[in-house]
Length: 372
Image (cartoon, rainbow, N blue to C red; front, side, top):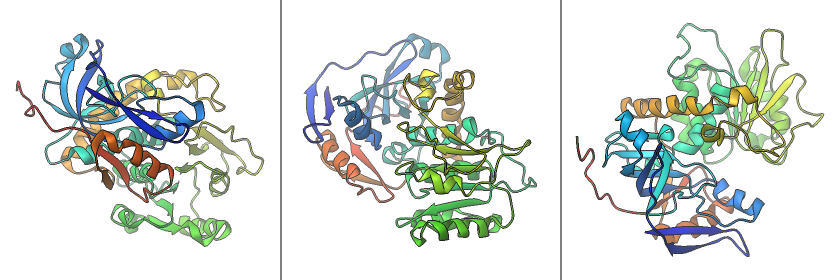
């Protein structure tokens, strides 16, 4: 089979190699990749450690084979349409004709959902879900807040990004409102997701930091705000976002989720009484943070992230099937695996503009549910 290796130096590029089709471990599935998704970490992580790797982690395709423990669950069959989150920095990633993923981060793709749409979902939705439901203890979609519950403001900075957008979709599924979505250009896809009747609002960050903070305060309209997600987490973006939150109280802790592991988040300007929590989405596979990360999670809590991942991925399939959830706007980068280098360079140059770049790797070779 063909596999694309991403090289961060001397400039970002890829090479294509012929390698054997991987064999699954006991808890793994081998998936024929129809579409591979991309994320900033696909080039960013490799650059930071100067390592070449098949760095793709978003898979959408057809089940080819699976391990002995997957057989016991009888959950997946050869030929099933699936999407998966591949463990970051591990072998057999998405930029290949066949990839491997553990069964607990695989979900069935319902009829009517394209492989392209499905490939936009796994990694970033996992990041959003861990941020909101594991690190900030908000109710998950399978146990949503009641329709009569009091408002619970959620501030999302970088709302038009895939992470911000999926956070909005998950919050809606959990009946978390009002959602204060802060974004710039490329925000048209957010309008249908926001419910004005529940106080949801879109704020343009280009009005300037101080005006942005004033606008958030005005839209929250006297409510205390204890939950925020900085979906950008770059160049100090978390500082003004933290200042939008109310201080923690005896009854309520104020949480700001960030997604870059390169910082300690100890600036004096961070809002008083605000706990900055770093989301490492890889914990859904490892049950731990990597040694040396400046901001670590609670060891006992993080240990159960894989179990949470199992619940999340099963429920994602259900919400996709009944229309409560959807993928992100996408752009197909041409030339299959040969186009991976081009797509990652465009991603690095900031050309995604509210879209996710995906790569059409293969064609469906098995009918769905071949042995149903």
